[in-house]
Length: 362
Image 1 (cartoon, rainbow, N blue to C red):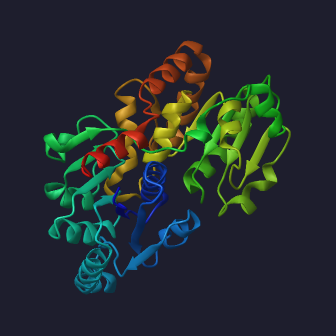
Image 2: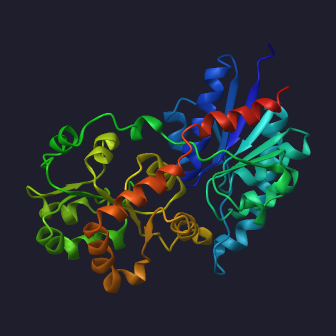
């Protein structure tokens, strides 16, 4: 067997980096002798996260276009040309058999140059509303792996394969009973528990909401497992009590999911895919500050299938208590949401994506 060479690019956020690493890990499992090279944006988190996962990475001098006229925008054409030239050099030296892009700015120049060098390309789009980089690259890609229905709005229909998003299945396979999981966090296994997830850095608006509603939760006899994010832990740890646990981040997501009766979360692609596998009732509060309003689109795709509840940030003050009480009062609704979201789970996504990549090696 030839030693296959795979080049991967995706970054800017964990949502683009994690899938790329998961795909590389599965390729490595199948082809232990293969060589891997990641390409990222010089000052972004992939430059740290990818080496931590055990892979080599090269950085391009690239960034996105800001929405307003700034010095950064004036630099953009220079950055783009520099990145295209650098990407061409990388492709020429590494000679990949396949190039894989998971979105983010750096994947644009890299896959563009791979395509023009005749390297087959596979795109992986995590969101229900396609990102700009993947839309630009779609014309020349061999295959586009997606996680939602209806993606022919953005991509040529014949190239689309619905695989789902790579997820950390080990985090979401709930082996523990509720009692044991609750005890791990110092909570009571017989009480209903609300799990709040704002992402690793935390979500300011969700934290403000939870702070405001602590008495409301208490009056309903609920416990709160509140992952407020490392940026906010100092500010909110004063609320820690028997029934409220305030964490910067959750070390044991499997326990957190097992302990939860209802989950309040952002709607990033990775979180949504994970929560489908968990199969519990979720209230999504999408972040309005992400490109193309991805999170709102992701949450809407679930709401359309009666698989979750969505509240926009600007509706929280008026709607939250009403929507939350309605959900908690109806075990039927809780069961229905849990069942419907579970139906949307695609636990074998990584394997299916790698199956598609393998077809291009033949």
